[in-house]
Image (tube, rainbow, N blue to C red; front, side, top):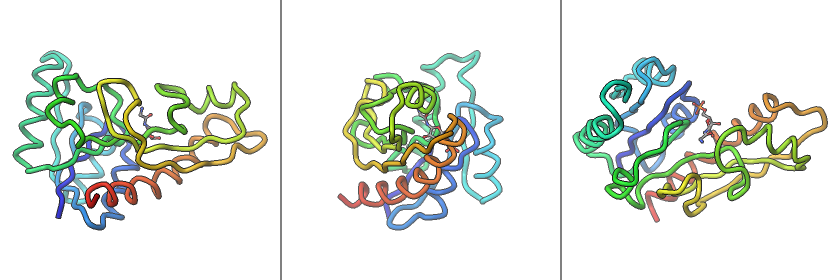
Length: 183
Ligand code: GAR
């Protein structure tokens, strides 16, 4: 069974979806750059192994070296970024090239980066969505492996749209990860 390490910075709802809907892969480690992340607490409650370390004070290179060690000790084959809000260095990405996935709350290549929903609304888009893609050195730019379209409703705010897209994320990510590990 392919072993997956999930990397997060926040509440971890995508991590929970990946764990709850795991089929054809196994989440063996949940790692974070924010020791106070809600997703880490959820992972511990679920009995999952966790890795928590802040780059503050030690620097990005030392943080990524420790993260890399933890992922290798856990014998991880694929890394799934799930609300990980830092850029991984080119050196780290090179070590895991082709084996890091990310979920992003837009229909890539549209709206890379932050504040995707507010920007889509400001541009009067009629649909939003989410994408799972391979991670490269460039922000939100690797091969798109799967997408779900979500209509924008009249009266939507960034918050209501984000909540609706998040439901789609929870359905998309486990399915794409399963297909990816078996492709
Ligand atoms: C999700 O909407 C995810 O797509 C987004 O952060 C949220 C994390 O929620 N990721 C990005 O914006 C990546 N640039 P979660 O912690 O509940 O999974």
